[in-house]
Length: 245
Image 1 (tube, rainbow, N blue to C red):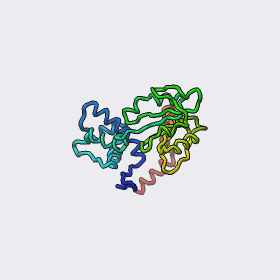
Image 2: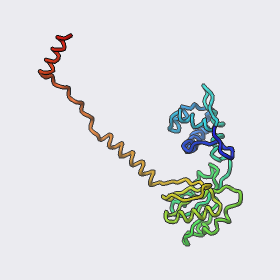
Image 3: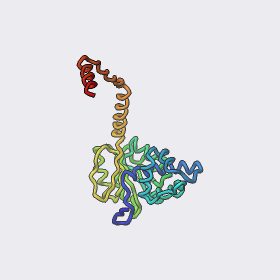
């Protein structure tokens, strides 16, 4: 198994993208009182193939027990550790419009180890507003919120034309992980990770599949080709073959 220079397991990006789904399914199983789960049952709960699930979990060093499956509590702890959920992560949200308000009020962050510590906007009509218990601050105050040594994730919920400038300011303040909701590609240093959430693109992908599905159901059933009508030439040919045989 490959390891990078700091000794952490090198897990494929596609696998990393599925780990939160496995973790959520395992949480549901644990709440239902289940102690073990087969790869087939866990794969079905997540909506992936069991072979893909086993390969994903093998990257974490988890292979389950033949005839028993996976220990739910142990696998949950292992995935949570790989996802950094054993560490408390600070989050700052920049751009407190409709989306920023919704993100600031999302209750699922705390249960997964994420703590929103700062809300920022440069709009005079927004600065000073209290949202989910936090006062919106001007972006100039960002460095004072970022404490040295504490991991912080920056969330960009700003219009596309401001995204790069705001991202630059986050990076300058020491943020090395950015979640970007603006439909644009951000230019960042090599040591900064950016994840893009493009809601419009996701809707377009769904529309693509919906359109193909509708076209498939609307297409008329194929009419079988008619059988060839015997001709005099074919009959005579058959007789000639019969005479040779």
